[in-house]
Length: 246
Image 1 (cartoon, rainbow, N blue to C red):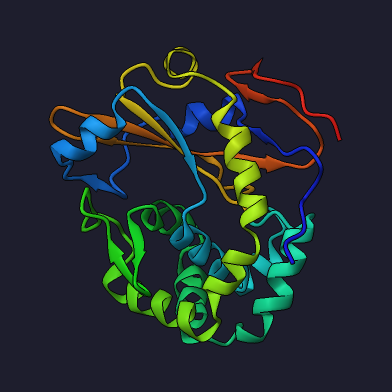
Image 2: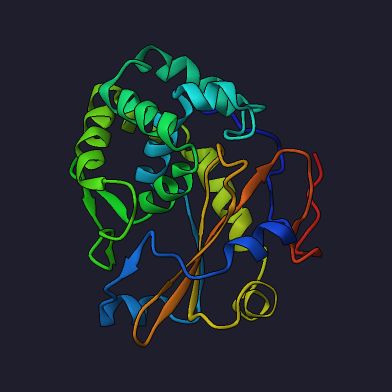
């Protein structure tokens, strides 16, 4: 059974995080279709992508994430659920590869998490979304995609993900009510055509934004940090949306 983090979920984006993360990213490049542009222009959309959560779960098992308490949000029942389910897979070859890469360059986490956004699951296969390119990312996702796919199958990740749909739905509902497209343009980035909020109960130190630019369309990907303490959503230091009460 899925357990809620709290009776009222809130999201926080600090001003510093937004300012540092608002530049264009080369971790994910665009190849937008007209269908995608028409479907997303002028919108703010929130989601808990399964592939993003899959990659975060694998990251949570790494030696670095276990030692550095700033990387993963551990102070939640969700994290306890995750470790109870996945800790026996800490020696999986995908975790081992991530351990090796992070030991050489811990800053690779940002490239890894940004890159995960460009992927999706298609009938159990980890594949690149049609609207993105990943070839400029410093992480070799040609190597990581099959490792993520193997981790997905061996751990029965889809069952874990489905068990927590109530929590994910609550997060999405809360995030979608926090601000309008016009408010996001004023307080996050006014030079993009849409905003995608990518949510995870595990997000902590690597909250921030990623701007993906195309020739005639660009979008801002926002990775908010989850709080279970009833704090309102804030952008550039200004509270917006409703206060949450535990």
